[in-house]
Image (cartoon, rainbow, N blue to C red):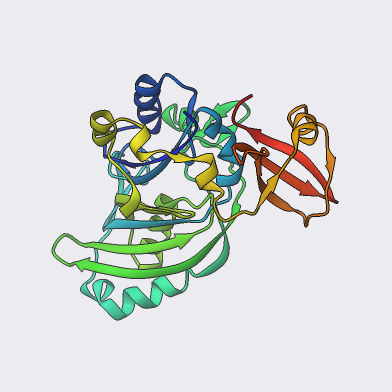
Length: 288
């Protein structure tokens, strides 16, 4: 069983919890593309069997989130699980729609962002949150990110919360973005809720809860490797060429540099190959 299943992760589950649950169901090698914090919900691509080889095709995918910022408090983790380390008054002017929309627009475009201390980024072999839990402050290198679109979804004046939708590049930390938005609004804040609604071409409305997988089985929801590359052209190889391809030998071919679906002479799907400089090279083979 090889491919991808798009899980709609529920709150309190870790990404690894989902991986272990799927592994128990299918007894295959399982991985995930793009960690979600336990308090976050939404789209989590799970890679099964040879599907784990697809991770390199997913790593650069853009993402979309809906986040809720709680204004007036700053927490050490940047989210609702942390301790309050600062409180600041939230003026009514801050919560005016025009004011919030004006501030949100200033975040569109390329920029640098410093990842939060409570993150899984490794420095000198340790994850940042390991340093943070010991009270150690580490200098973290800023990363370039890009915000493609950001819009206000709703304002909850009584709760002093704002909800926004953002489409962004990989590596964007919404906890940090939420804190930066609050700061630019003239107060402090933290990410109270987070839902990931899109990863590349995978959307929340096409995702499935883990309980449905347990009930119906994995196969019902599995996106095969062939389906994942459905937009790519196919190449049919005869027996001799196919044998060389499977053995890792590069094959001369008059095709443009691109990824291709590979089939045998009986039109059975074999896997994925990549052409570079008129040479076809094996990438993923489902029967090896």
